[in-house]
Image (tube, each protein chain N blue to C red):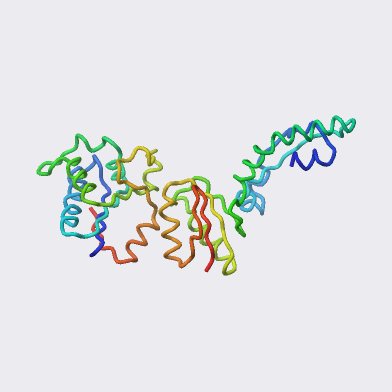
Length: 119
Length: 148
């Protein structure tokens, strides 16, 4: 099994890119691959409770539906701690399944062979 | 410090001033690591044994508080070295400082880290695996790293 690491830097500033991250990730999960979405920069907002509820990009399923499918299928949601902190986002504000991580966690995944795709 | 002064026969111990006297000094970084402050204090010699005994008894009631303070300022896991990362997250470089401190240890020696940032709970174990160091213990915001 490969480890697929999808890196998303966008929230409301580009809902299409954010949605596409979850579409690709859900495809990886349905292909039985270990799959992680790494949220950085504005993307960290996506992991906060309620943020994605009203977001839907043209031609995509609602973002909250894509996220629900991702989490319930065993996807790992990593939230960049260095990006969350200046936005005053704490672990308590995050949806279930989301974890605040730092650079070493991402580096370890890459060292261990994770294949990454940035959006 | 109060315990030491009172045990020496003094009463009415009081810190009258404290402040940062190490900023800009050559030992600044070491002072910061240990949260060192400059202080002024005063106390007077006990008038008699009764007054001194009363002061000693009052001090005993404060011991738990003092223990809590000391717990925040040093190792509670019996480590050879201690580093307080406070709430520093990965963008503020605590792992760089931890790496430096671990390199100064001899094989088998330990560094205890206190770190409250949530990213450290994921990152410190990851760093230990990457750097080939042993995470010997983890209790709450305390991490014990043993140099391999």
